[in-house]
Amino acid sequence: MKTSYKPDFLERITQRRAALRADVAALLPAPRPIVWEIGSGHGHFLVGYAQQHPEKYCLGVDIQLERLERSGKKRDRARLANCHFLRAEAREFYNVLPAGVTLAEIWVLFPDPWPKARHNKNRLLKPEFFEGVAGRAGEGARIYFRTDHLEYFREVESALRTLATWKTEPGAPWPEGTVTVFQERAPSYHSLVAVRTSHPAKPVEIVAPGLPRPASPTSPG
Ligand SMILES: C[S@@+](CC[C@H](N)C(=O)[O-])C[C@H]1O[C@@H](n2cnc3c(N)ncnc32)[C@H](O)[C@@H]1O
Image 1 (cartoon, protein in one colour):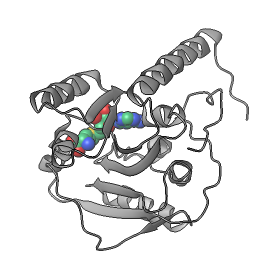
Image 2 (image 1 turned 30 degrees about the vertical axis):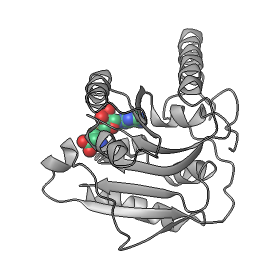
Image 3 (image 1 turned 45 degrees about the horizontal axis):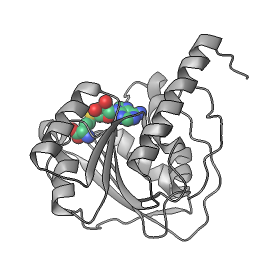
Image 4 (image 1 turned 120 degrees about the vertical axis):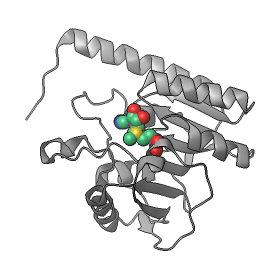
């Protein structure tokens, strides 16, 4: 079924994507591997991680401005040059990554679980997402996923099992890091580490629900 979008909506999305592309190009002017945190929230994890790993370039994206502002303040207090935060929807960010930028680590800590069945389509971590990001992740890249929502956890485990590009590593060590706001609130949680295999990734379009396809296809890095 073909979706039709109103011209002013399309215009706004096009402008937003162009602005995001320019912001990301300014932050990532040179080809490099990055640590990408999706839904970085209040920045606790990424600021701590960037501090522990000054050699890693860490970039957190979130859609909530107020959380990003707090994150930026934490980063500034810690005087970190290797830690950045950007307001972006994860899939939109992915689609404007400059060529040559690769995803060395992808962190997703306590993503919104969208618990109602009719909202399941809004969940970020789907097979097409993992296959898509595999296109920008070299062999040995890692996904670190943690959630307190068992059903989402199981869904992610199953999604990864269907793909040759990622292999889960049960029992893999979880790098030390600052506890996030949502982890602190969670009575219990589940963690998963997946490693990028050498299997070539299929070209997959990653589009957020309700948005039109990006104008230019994602180029492998
Ligand atoms: C449940 S909170 C977890 C925040 C943090 N990771 C933690 O553990 O405290 C989920 C975060 O993901 C952000 N978020 C939700 N959907 C997103 C998306 N599609 N792209 C980027 N960030 C998103 C929300 O704004 C929120 O800050």
